[in-house]
Image 1 (cartoon, helix red, strand yellow):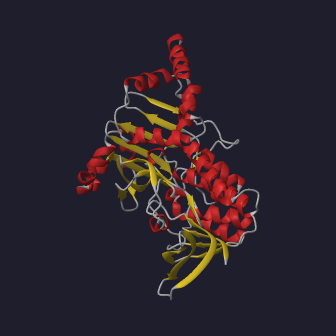
Image 2: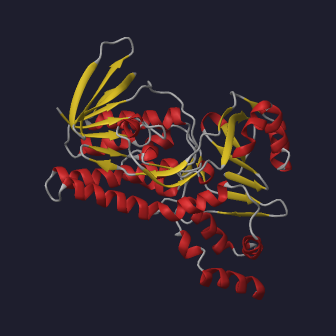
Image 3: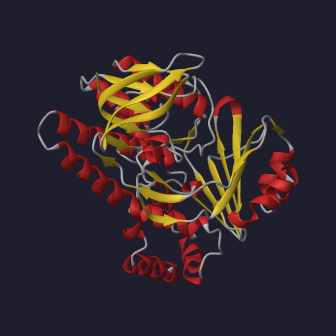
Length: 401
């Protein structure tokens, strides 16, 4: 019998398994995929997530994979652009946009090295229950006979459509409908200065350098236009790029290296992340639109919070259900401002007049421009930056300038 079975071995599940194993717990980590493999995902890991990789001893491995650091953000509003760098997190100034086939493999191998048992190519078919208490899983390797495993805790780290959450009929709250749809692909021969963002009315363009000398360019349309976009993916992709002429000109000098990947399946919700014998982490427990690219950073943070709670419960310092309730409270407090901010941005609506005035006022104010980027990166508290007092200070500074 295991202390924990973690279902899903990507950016939430592998760190959870790794951290539990490092504390001496017996952990089984399973995933239906084999590694390395890609998955549809945003790419940015902002400074707080990179700081966690550094604490775990994994940042050097990411750097050694030759993923380029991102040290500048350009926020192009059409009439003008703001450029700067988010404030650091724990002395970490760089962000990265790794391919998931590289990052997830690093995380899986770190879990394995920590002592977790890893089963790739393993499909979970059922969560076992004793009354309402989760006790184990039943599944199989490809073309294998069904096997049953039991644990003190079953952890769903299996994404937005979590089988674990469905099996346990986990309730949701703070729900929002899908707001945008997204397509991306990879380009070689396209120069970029760090991360570039181009918000346009009803459209969104983001560009980041990633592995193998390529850049990932992601386009967003409103959710209700998904089928129109899908009717001519290549044509609509190109038409959207034309809204950012400087980027479009660079793309014309490059080459598309892979197929288009896209979806309109981007719900916004919180799930209750714990119950008798089970817990949820990462997208399985909390999901929002990728416009702020917070998913992997969120997963890393929540893995740490969950492991702290499990360890407190298993070690007897606190009743387990009480510790898991604390995990939920800490998670929600950490992400609610970003969740609301993300949903606002994902509407792809033109910025309201006060935001337009703020962007103008930020021109020439590098300190506050950097702090504005920090609200997206997660290094500056959103309520602090957008407080009436701070906005007034920025406006008054612009008038004096």
